[in-house]
Length: 170
Image (cartoon, rainbow, N blue to C red):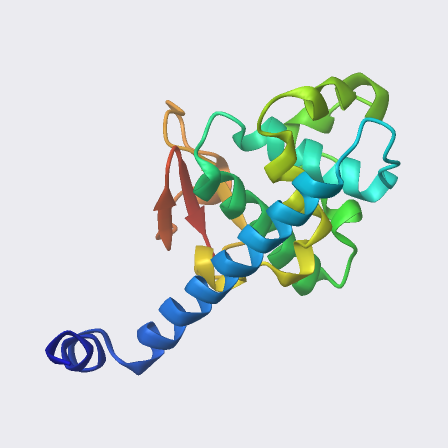
């Protein structure tokens, strides 16, 4: 009980609510991943949209833990929400995700065979259910290892750092 009071008093109710939303989202994603694992066969037909979203997540964050992949998915969901576009439109918009610069779907479909693909597919299939709050409603990010920050990050305060990515709400 003491811990709960500390959470409410020191973190505030909004943060506690965000924490519970995150726990609930994680539980939903675990269920989705279990469902995808149970129903993913080599002959299963994936939609073009699911492939594009999953490939974007894989190309951007397959070297991260699941938290990093989830974060990239949450940014895609946030941009789709803000811009009133589909997640696929967000992913394929010119110069938004470098993996698509000069590439077509068939050029990147090999990424769907990497071990992280099952999780990326679960995220892609549930993109509208992802907690955008997980990344502080960020709509931009860049890798922490970049020597020079992107022009849009100059003077901006990051809202989160998850794995090798820094997230911004512009």
